[in-house]
Every structure is written in structure tokens, then in C-alpha cells.
Image (cartoon, rainbow, N blue to C red; front, side):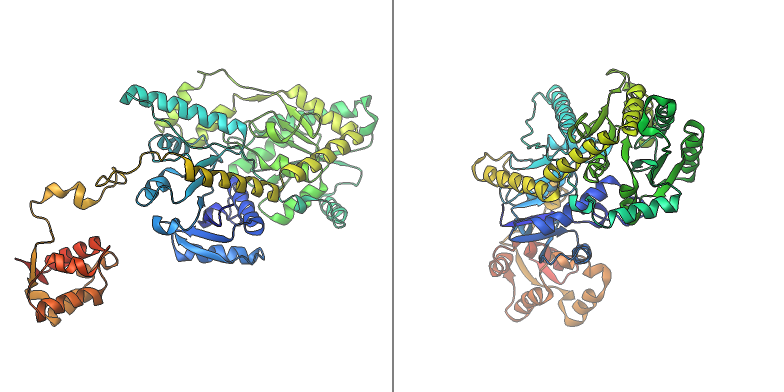
Length: 562
């Protein structure tokens, strides 16, 4: 494990207290809390754009009762970032960081990101930038599932094939793409002596008898961006009728309830969900609770008997809620979809339901219209979702089996709980992260550097030194042999007025400090003219600051060039 570790911090990536609770935020918060608690790194560095974000991070750690000392590293300073062996950020935004690193030493540290939703234009463009950014073999983009890795690899392969056609050569992308799943805090879902009380309390509040069965869904309540609810309603309605038809004694006298815990983005969606539940699942009481409240989620996990999530959306990549259900000891009915395929074992932890999609080529016009903004993002993924179908017969059979067989519920739930704690508990996942970062550190020591910057060439050609990129705009340039003398504005009164004026004093943070350039002026006044080279010699290694300062002094006739 690197002795120093840097993690990128901006509040939005880790905050679950807002009105919109997103999966990436829940995952980010859990990851950071676990990293702070379980990492073996000697020094933890908070990489933030400013002190305000750093202080927010410190307060967040304090609220988690984590006593780790954090070091602030400014996110825009590659020299300071070199103090960390690796800089981790909770998204795929590595290209800009790679270009920034090229302004310093590319071997100084590794970059590590992680995938969440990957089907947006913005994320796909980030993937495209990976092919041309100075990504190194000691950098990694963690894929939370094998399904995500396949999609990323396919995107990179097709993009680099295009670049080969366009530019005559196919670039290599040396980025590591390890598969490491998201984690959970297994202990927070485990049954305790209070669980039965919590279970009974919510059930009493909702009018659910002790002997009744509760099917639970947890997640954003949004049909076009998460999971369409009507297939679930249809399957639950059919299952309750099949289970009460006399074929299974386990269902006798037991009423079924559907509990949906999440949040709506719009009143229109809330109305549609509730009307659809009444229309397509009339035999089963359907209750909606606000899943943004942690205490509600905790009560729901305790009150439920089984969990259903029929994800059908390309926005999904991993899916935390089936894993949380497993940790809670609930049998899971989920679609055989993306990351669900790697967490829920069919007929061991639950049931994975087959999903059918249209063949490749059926969505070309959707892609075209999304690219052109004829379709907005939600409309794009919603149209794809509407043509993606879970096997309704298989869903119904799975729910019926769980209704009728309490021993099956218990067996699947126990297996899921053991698997969640053994393989997906955050301390286990953090160790996998640290093992990856050790591998990246070794690659930094022995691998060939990609695109090493040449002397005199720009670190980032699309954002070059303005005095080089536009040098041809002027025929005259500062040089060491230039002789400088005091100008008319070099008097105390005139110079003081310039320093107090906002427009003339602007940009002082990129020039010599006032005491330093005042000393230069005193030398010109008391000794007489001197070459610019004399002043450069006084500040070795700070030549750029000297040149910018002299240019500024020339601008307002504080000094003159002879």
C-alpha cells in the first residue's frame, strides 16, 4: 500500500443528504467512510479544489466518528499531488487529471477512477478522451462489474478503430481496467436484538399483520431511469393469485403487501406509479415510503420477507440494493442484468430472471437523436427501457415459490447474507483497492512512460502557455539582455495608486510578491539601470514569475526597456 494516498473530494460525490439521492452518492459516501476507517495508508490526503471543500470533508469524517488526520492537497497543483502515491476520484474523470499531471512528473503518482452510470454522452466522451490523454499503464479505471468492463473495452476498441481510420494510426490505451465491485457495510444490515422490534414497529404502523408477507423494492421510483414498475406489479398480482389458488399451503391465510421505498422526482411520476399500482396490482396493498431517510430504509429492510428488483435500464451498472437485500437476509428476485449477474447467484441467493433485448442495430436512431439533442437523456434511456423485457412467467414463478416455501426464503436469505459479508463487506473491498494501488505503484517503477513530454513542447497542446501559443502576435519579447530603467510611474505615489486599483493590481497571485518587486524598483532607483538577467539571477527557478512581473511593470510604465 502506498505510504500516502490521495482521494478527490467534492461534496456532491459523497453527499446523501440532498433531495436527490443517487446511487453514485450512496456508493461514494460508503466508500469514503470505509476508506477512512480501514485503509492501511500512513498518510491520507484530501485532494480538493479549495479549503472549503477540505473543511467539509473534515466535518464529514468527524460526523462518522473517524479520527484520521487528513492533509489538504490542492487539486490544481501537480507538484503537490506528487505527495500522494495515488489520486483516487469517485468517477471516470481521469483525462483532465492526466493532462494536469503532465505539467509535472508523470511517474510521480497514479490516477484511479471508478465507473457508475456509463451510458451518458458525457461519460462516453470521457472514455473517448482516454485514447488521446497521456494515460499511463500505472493508471486504472475500476469497473464495478464485468458487464461494465465489457462495455468500456468495446467502446475503446471501436473508438480507436475510428481514430485509426481518421488519423492513420490506432492509439493504444494502456489504462488498467480491474473489476472491483461496490461494497456494503454488512454489519449495518445484520440482524440485531432490535431488528424484531423495528420490524414489528413498521408493520404495525402500516397495518401489516405479523403473519403477512412483505415484498420490498428499494430504489429511485422512476420508470425511465431505474426500473419500470408495471412488470413488477403484474408479476406480484399474478403470483398472489397463483399462490392462493390452493397449490401451496405456505400461502394459506397470509396476505401479501408490496412496499416500495424510494423517492419521486416529479409529482407526475408519483401519480403515475400509484395509479399503476392500483390498476395492475389491485389485490395487493401497495405502500410507498420516502427512501431518502436512512431510518425508513433501515425499517423497510427489517420489515420485509423478500426483495424484488426488475432492473431493465442501461443506466444501471452494478446495483447496490440487491446486495443490501442479501446482507439483510432477504431472498432476492432480480433481473439477469449487468452487475446483478455478479452478486446474486441463481437459486442460491435468489432468482435471476432472464431479460430479452432487441438485437444490435435496433437503436441506431435512438443514438442519433440523443447525440443531436432531439432526445434528452431521460427520453433516450427510457425508450431503450421500454423495449427491454424481463420474463414475466419466470418472475411470477419465483415470487410464488418464495410465498409458498418459508424454508426456501430462509435458505436463500442465509446464503445471501453470508455471501454479502464474506465478499462485499467494505473492509474486504478496501483491501482489493489497496492491492490494486500496490500494483499501480509497481508499474510506475518499471513500466515505460507513455507520451513523455519533450523539452520545449507544451504539456497540453490544447491549453498551451499563452506566451508561446501566441508569441507571433508580437515582434518584441522580453529577454535577459534587455536593459531596464525606472519609468514615470515608478514614483511612490504613482506606484501606490496602481497597487490600490483593482484593474491594474489584478493577477498579483501569478507575479512576484510586492516586497520582492519593490526591492527591484529600489535597485533601479538607487543603483541605476540593470539587465533583466540581473533580476532573473536573484530568483533562480522562478524565471516565469520574474518575466510576468517585469511585463506587468512595463505595462504601466513603472519600468522601461532601453
